[in-house]
Structures are given as C-alpha cells and as structure tokens.
Length: 282
Image (cartoon, rainbow, N blue to C red; front, side, top):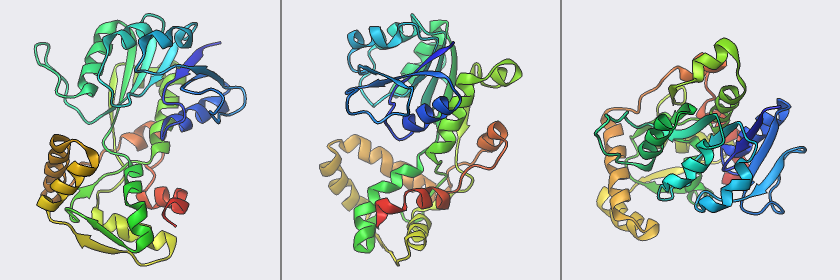
C-alpha cells in the first residue's frame, strides 16, 4: 500500500488533507512536532519532526512514496528537500502565485526556491499555487467582536480560496491514477475562490453570517505601515503587502476556474468559509 507523508498535518490545509486521505483509506503518516498532542483521525500514524531540522526527517520519510509538502516560512535548507526527494517519488507542494523562473534567474521568494529544487530533483511534482487563503480573514476576528474593523485599502478586491478546496485537490493529486494522475503530474495549478470581494465586502459578509453589524473604518496606508511593521516585525514585508492591496483596488485579484475543472463543482464561496468558521468571530 502506498504510504503518504503529510507535513503541516495539523495546520489550516494539512488537517483537511490528512482527513481526506484517511477517508480514502490511504496509509497516512503525519509529520508533527508533538505526536502526543496531535489530534488526528483514527489510523493515521503520527511521527515527530519538523521542516526546520533536516536530521529529524529521516524516520518520517522512511517507506514513504508520496508527500504533501507545505513550507512554514522558514529559510529554505536544501537538505530538507534532499531528504524528502531521496525517498519519495511524488511531491504535491502548497505554493503561491509565483512566476516560473528562467534557468539563470534568482528566486525572489522561498516558494520559487522550493519549486526550482523540486523541478530539478527528478521526482514527480504538482504545485498548488493558492492565490490567498480565506482563512486570512481571521486576522479581523478581535476587531469584528468589537464591532469595527480598522484596516487599509477597503476597496482592494481579493479572490480568496477556502482551505477545503485546496485540500481536496491535494488529495486527488496524491491518490489519482491513470488519466486523472496526468492532470496533476508536472502541473502548477493556480487556485482561487469563485469571486473577487473587497475587504469591505468580506467584513460585511462576516457580519451577516454572525448576525451583527460590523463597521469598516479606513486606515491610512502610512499609519498601517507603522502599526503593522511594529506588530509584525518586518517593515519590508508590510510594504510589500500594502503595495499589493493598493494594486487590487484598481485591478481586482484574478479568478480562475481551476477548482471547478479539477473537482467538477464550483469553488466554495467566501460566505461558505465564514459559515464554517463563524464561531471564531463571535
């Protein structure tokens, strides 16, 4: 029986990947920091390790044929992927909306660096380029409970994707055979939600689902730069996010039909995501 390793197994997407594979009666191994604390479906093997420590991965990859890989924003240590691709034959990687690199072009993000190493590794790969997660709306939870969201670029339109759509595609890519397998091997799937909603519209929908009015208060970009840099500890990252949000005011984030093509149903809406997570905002 094929053994599949899931990294980030208790995270936003990974826990749904584990559950989906378990439902498919696949032999699943979950990479976790603390096997005793991990809440996993019955029959899933938990193994201790983390992607920041290549030496901790030897036991995790032993006997593994396929891997679902997410990267927790750490500096990329090539040894990690060498350990994984030295054992596995297929890797499904949760990436983001990045450009393909020319052979002599330097990566500008860790996603590009990982994609390049996987392309060169000799394993079969699939990249799930999720444009942005609906789960990022959880950053507003405290403000929503207080009744007002204060944030920049309220008219920035985002095509946010439900993590369950990402996970379902990952499960299909990891378990498919024949013609279905050929749809995923060597593919870079750009995954988006079904509509581009502004920040203001997202907040309104959250309020409607939880049954209370939530106000939007526009935060000036220069104030956001100072406050977010202090809170997040990375002024350059904040500046990049603000530039992106500003661009989405005039040019909404793009929408693809990839989820519908791969799953045979429409992508889940932002309202559906809020309904699934309503308690987080109450």
